[in-house]
Amino acid sequence: MNTVTVIFPALSENEPFARSVVAAYCMRFDPTLDELSDVKTAVSEAVTNCIVHAYAGTERGDVRLECAAEGDTLHITISDSGKGIADVARAVEPFFTTLEEEERSGMGFTIMQTFMTAFEVQSRVGGGTRVTMRKRFGAPARGKGLAEEEECGAGKGTETPHKGAAPAGC
Ligand SMILES: Nc1ncnc2c1ncn2[C@@H]1O[C@H](COP(=O)(O)OP(=O)(O)OP(=O)(O)O)[C@@H](O)[C@H]1O
Ligand SMILES: [Mg+2]
Image (cartoon, rainbow, N blue to C red; front, side, top):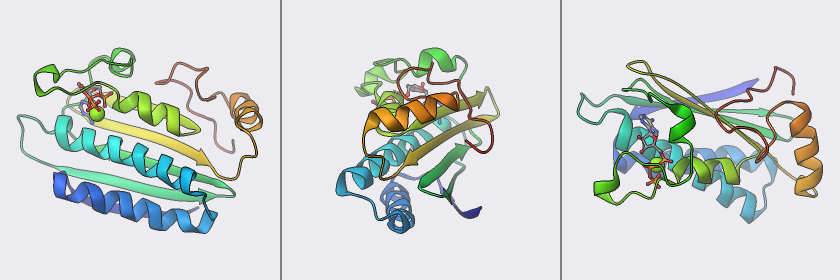
């Protein structure tokens, strides 16, 4: 696969850069404005999580962003080597946040899940977090795309969001 990898420090000033990199990569799919906006928003949430949560209270590390194209599907992986998430199932629930005092809404993972075709979180305490997402471009209707995605075991909205890694080739 034609994979582009960008590694950058987990600093808030780099979040717009990450969004722009993904937007530029998406041009090959001839995206609609809505599709482009969905992907940029999901990437923004994932990168912001690395910036805000991953290295909180520790030495700041890097964010790794990988984009790959496979037919009409964009594959994105955003990972950090930060503190990790103890309970991923809980973390992906709407409105769950560990930063209530900073008035975070706890909707980042829910937004990623909603805006992308497939979404998965893998994390290990002390070992970092990896968010893997897919976006299928040009799907004529959500229904058709969904049916196909579900066959791959990662249907949006129907699977437990932190599970469902699609087997290779889906
Ligand atoms: N990369 C990460 N490293 C460590 N913890 C994370 C990471 N991403 C998310 N989390 C944990 O998962 C929780 C939920 O994340 P989510 O993005 O849904 O909400 P939030 O970041 O708290 O709020 P919002 O995204 O609405 O500003 C976070 O509060 C945090 O505890
Ligand atoms: Mg968040």
